[in-house]
Length: 147
Image (cartoon, rainbow, N blue to C red; front, side, top):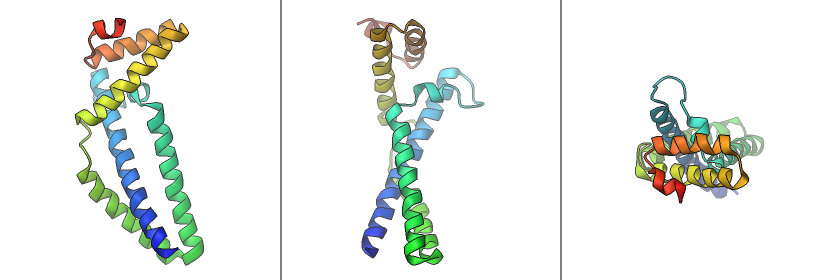
């Protein structure tokens, strides 16, 4: 049980680091698309739905693991696991691709393109036009969107 707790802390630290990097990527791309550096720009519009759900699951599991650790082993162990997770998350963040990397941009653009296609399919012209505008600002050629 003890070793499983530590392994899950490290795995969750990796997931937290990835979620933080992805959130940073959507923030920087959202600001770039809105041509402003204040606020979040279009971060909410371009964030993939799966990434939001992933973040909620990761943070919920982290909170549950810390609560379980506190209940089972006391405040000292819970604090030690929290500190370990924070250090591991900082290390993993250094190892993961940067926010401006092509990895995150591809995932965001693919999600935006799927949502655009869904809006067109469902006849939601307003949302489709808004997403098409964002995709064009992101560098997706209009010819690709019309096909």
